[in-house]
Length: 146
Image 1: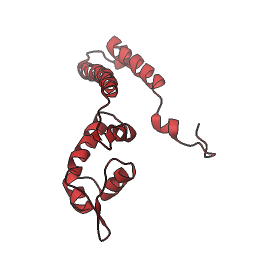
Image 2 (image 1 turned 30 degrees about the vertical axis):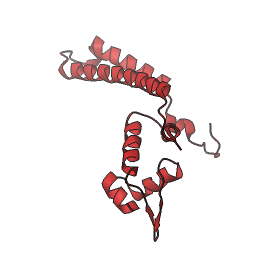
Image 3 (image 1 turned 90 degrees about the horizontal axis):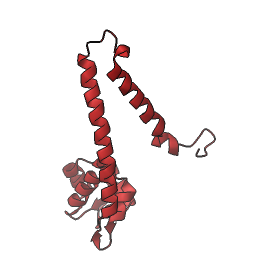
Image 4 (image 1 turned 60 degrees about the vertical axis):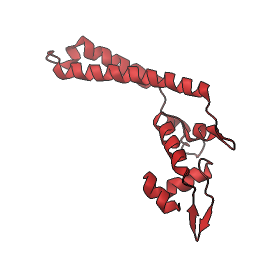
């Protein structure tokens, strides 16, 4: 399959495929003119990458699971990610329930509702303990990382 066929079949732009190849996530097996050629099994790898990204794995974590012998699943990493997802599910469930409550709350002002105020306190705590990953790794004005 050439890169345009893989892009069409996967829904990923060719630039993403080239980036994945640079990161060692996929490999082309030659060229036809200027176009990279891939084995059809690249679609399985792309599906695994998509699944991993959806679960919150970084590209580096996913790349570490692809060895020269094939796929090597890090079970401890999977378990840790599952725990992270459980925490996120719990937080999102609480948020959903709070939004539903706020939508039907009979208090004349939401700031008079104890349930709404509890949600605000929880949201404030979550915001202060979770650093913005983009800001954390973004260089400062002088070009240096914080």
